[in-house]
Image 1 (cartoon, protein in one colour):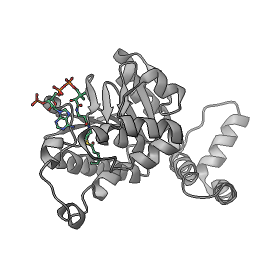
Image 2: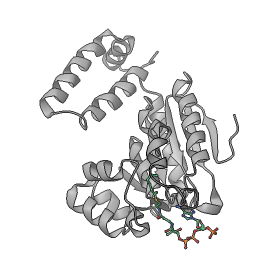
Image 3: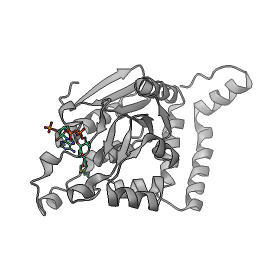
Length: 256
Ligand code: HXC
């Protein structure tokens, strides 16, 4: 399948999606978001694929929603068409793990899409921000909620109220990104990390994503109760038997 605004490729059992609108720093047009949602849906359903990587260019992961495309929109048109529809949310709705590999700008909707992924690997050059305030609006694809949960109220308020950018070191320090890697190594590192995940038991990877995300949706005691029930269910999988037997027999597991 070919697309106009993204590239979608397979690297073994890993799906790699590259945002590809270089003239506009990967501004997130409605076409790009539709193509991204379509490609992710396909990869999520493809049994060969165990994890995905979402990346941009060395200059920009994405510089936000396409301002030129949306500048003439009016309310209630935005309300009636439910602007920022579930196509955006497809990134968060995938069941398989997605790694955001971010170099350069991840701003506005770009930062929001990166935060919808399961974790962010940042190149040294990465810059994150919610600069919507500078164009008279505010985050609309989950930024006010996800950024606040990730970095806390004080940092999130400052970022959203001033629109300033955060570099990779600060982003790692405050827990927005999991690791920083040299720019030249970003894609290879992200693909290798995704391959490592894809080589694990598939039910285990899907379940881990599910139970960690539950932490954002529920109380601690309910989350722990859910985790325990799911842990008990792991003993119904062939991969539990194989993984534990392989450990005892001092060999590599062969997950089915
Ligand atoms: C449309 C964009 C764009 C955007 C950059 N471009 N960002 N086009 N939408 N979000 C275009 C520029 O117009 C320019 O096109 C080309 O990309 C290169 O950008 P420059 O500004 O010339 O580059 P530079 O000077 O390096 O500055 C980079 C930048 C700046 C700091 C990232 O482009 C910038 O501030 N962009 C806007 C960031 C932003 O406000 N994002 C939030 C958007 S609102 P031409 O044709 O002139 O070469 C949002 C809401 C999300 O995301 C809520 C859900 C939808």
